[in-house]
Amino acid sequence: MNIFIDSADIQTIEQALKSGYVYGVTTNPTLLQRASVHSQEVPSLAKQIIELGANELHLQVYSEDTSQMCQDAARLVEIDLKRVVVKIPATPAGFAATTQLASHGVRVTLTAVYTVAQAILAQSVGARYIAVYLGRMRDDGLDALALVGQMQRTLNAQRASVEILAASVRSAAEVEAVAELQVAAVTLPLAILQQLPESPGTMAAVEAFTDASKSLQ
Image 1: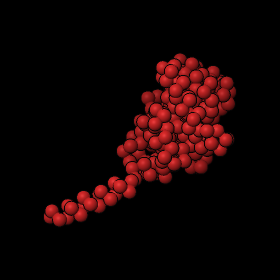
Image 2: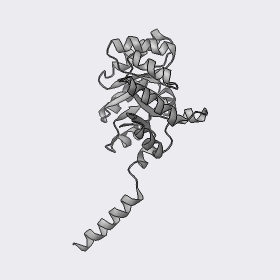
Image 3: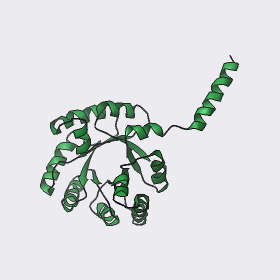
Image 4: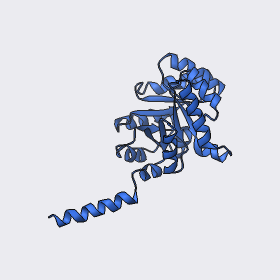
């Protein structure tokens, strides 16, 4: 499973990438707003993130119609075609834009995917990822894990190349749950990222090793 940091704050991103187990970075307009990053500042932020070692950087378009989405995407991939993945909402206009972009080799994450049908369409239009929001699904009264599991089984049955990127994850236990469902990627806030290596058992073992090491000196 590839693990991403979900943030637009450069200090948070740097801290996450230094962990050694974070593959890349995902952002969206809400995160950019929260970090006080304006659209004209995104290229500079993106270059900093790439210099810090992110393998992939997911940047979202700002427009709502197909033509403008494609223009936004063209500007975003100019930053770094190899590492930038363009996020596009899973709307009718977004699916149309994804078809055009994928035909030109642009990798796309269709974001805010809520149904199995949308997951199937994502494969049809050549998307690289679909972003599913576990927490938001649950807030809407859906059984998030059951729905994501159904999406993954369907994609497996179709031998689809599109991968699920789980977002809006609210606990370390949910990371384990989606991994068991064969979900390929997950994006997390820093607080949950930092919980992943933690284990009381590990700490107890380390303390025992430390005590034993002192007796050997």
